[in-house]
Amino acid sequence: MSKKVILACVDCGSRNYSTIGKQEKSERLELKKFCKTCNSHTLHRETK
Image (tube, rainbow, N blue to C red):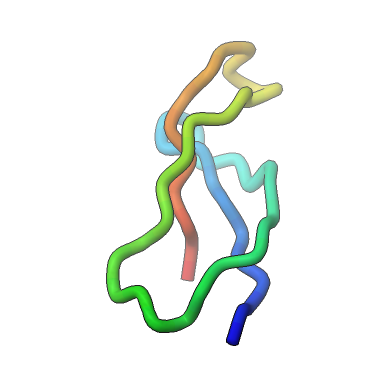
């Protein structure tokens, strides 16, 4: 079963993206995305 997760920038903390993630995973989802606030590609991590 999937759930909606919010991704936040590691550098500035801005919550820019949402995606579908699986519930069975214990670790947080991490993707490299473009942050409008930082104006660069940064690591975005799943928030709680």
